[in-house]
Length: 338
Image (cartoon, rainbow, N blue to C red; front, side):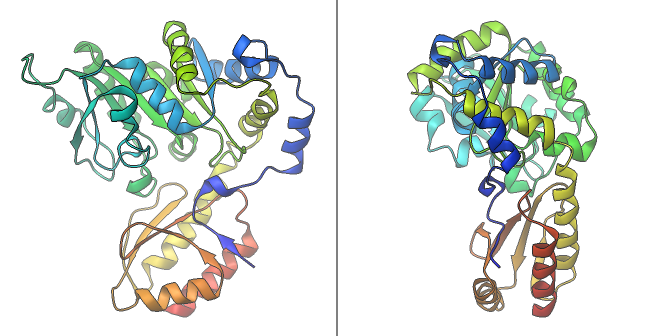
């Protein structure tokens, strides 16, 4: 029995989701005539109480559209050094928008308003203009760490007072909302734009949503087109997103519970040097150097798939296709290695 914990992007649609997809009404979305896409965009914009939303092929594209829409060539954005937009989006900040980056060392991916304040460039022609602050919630490289809404509001208020745009990479935002029992409306108020992935914990096969004002989304459609993101009869994919939102948000707590059980087991294992705190569905842990080859060999022999986060760091990500039977098998193996 293979256990794939490399990412929550590896889920496959359930039969119920597939039935929803195949019964979808479709039209040409480039002409804004796909009714299912419109329904999806209305559902998410109403949930966050924002004016509009845009269906995008991927989270990377949604983030890159936002960055390009908020900035001009030569500007600078601020983000944490571990941010997905900086590390894992193919250098898109530079190639798509011509923007430089000021990197901050936050707390497991989370930056503070004090750090933002001290990172604003002076109004001097020697420096790029600081125009955009980007947060990530949950923080992937921080082990699925979550922002407190109070911290977000402090950063948001500072940005508004200083004419800075603020964008949220919310690829796993619903994990944070469920874990912290937060209200999506608070996020809609705090950010100028938000990207939300449908194909991670929510289990859709593809797609992300970009949220913002009507004016922002109007411009974002032009950027999406220029990046090759305009799609035609995509109501079939939007239907999967609707099903995911309607059925797979609350159940994220099950993934979190499984992750915490794995975290507790690893924390008490003699071959594990360190485990990042576990708040959601991501577990990042470090194996002692003299044990790493042995542990990885056992993982391979038992078909346990993981992601490497450096020489000795590994990542597990729980998801809706990771069931109790697989969890029990994994726990037996982890305990046997101790």
